Length: 68
Image (tube, rainbow, N blue to C red; front, side):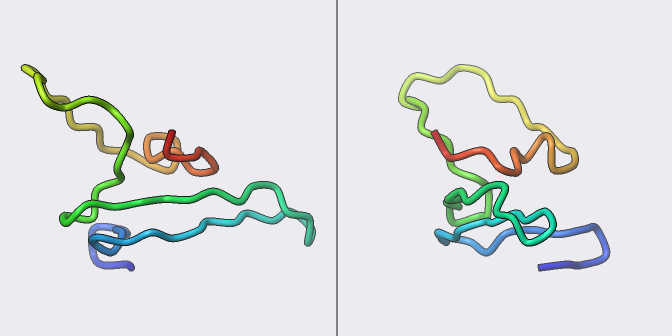
């Protein structure tokens, strides 16, 4: 989805992202989002004391990188 600030993911969603180069499949990965549309990563959050937010482009998001 696109808006004035760029793009964002749908909340509570699992989707596949595929990338092609000259019709050749380069990557095919799964992406899961939480209820705010943030990408879910498999980490233990039960005793987390600190939080860091990262803003950026596809490198920060992890295009072509599986959830794990």
